[in-house]
Length: 341
Image 1 (tube, rainbow, N blue to C red):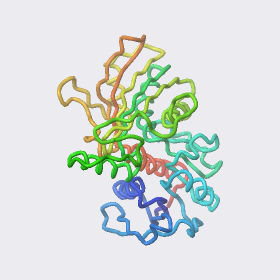
Image 2: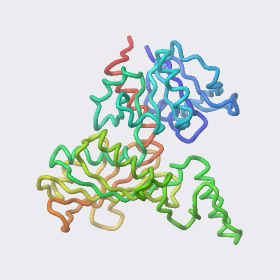
Image 3: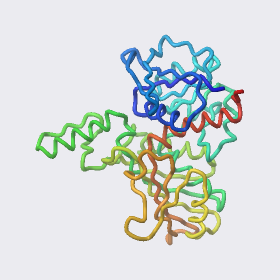
Image 4: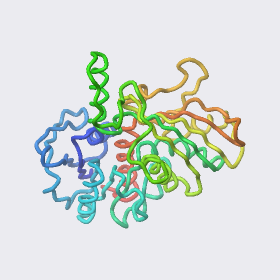
């Protein structure tokens, strides 16, 4: 016996990926519906590689009564309006936007990191999915924190354009083509040219000079992992279609060698250690696409601080950073709370 599942924002990058992941992982589904705005009503979406086509229904007129789980990937304004309506109808919402993440009554979940926190979902019937850059980071940090206690993290991100949606991917493609043929480049999605460039600016600027993306990484890591961890982030958009990368410096309370860190990460859930000190002995974003792992490379001791480790981590941001994590939350929810049959 399976669940009745709704995917909200089914026509977007993450919504389509959610469909793919649900099918790949054989999530127990009795009925599935694709929901989108009125302008996408009637658009056909394939349910994974099953050959089954779903016609998008209008979210505005949908009744969530009798549905078990709704996976939302339609942005904060849509989540703000419709997630509480779905939750009030008895459907558990797993939301990919930032709207509910810091709500104290909404658990923020990465199943490999803080699965027990999901028990708090009953307060609002809503569970939040973390920011894409946070999700892969905490998967890498959790086992190391358990082993040696993390005091401080400094992270620089190299985030792909798919984090800005289909329009971001289109802009990179169009600008790259324009440069090759000598046409002018006019930024529309991003603040500056993204093709053959990097932009140290994701989301809006805050009063302290950081961006909201950087703030998200700080507060979400504290909520998911440990409020005592100090974290500084610099988030950068790079001309990569899919896959976020992060250069991470970690300072621990207790001594931890590079060899010990490698052993821990080799066995950690959700992590894949690929770390040979030779050409091609590490993972790049291109190799992470379509996979659910958080890849760890370049693990080494940091000689500038006591008990320091540097590492490189890469993950498919549409998967572990969004769609896969949401489906893993749904699986966890099913095992612990919504048992069928």
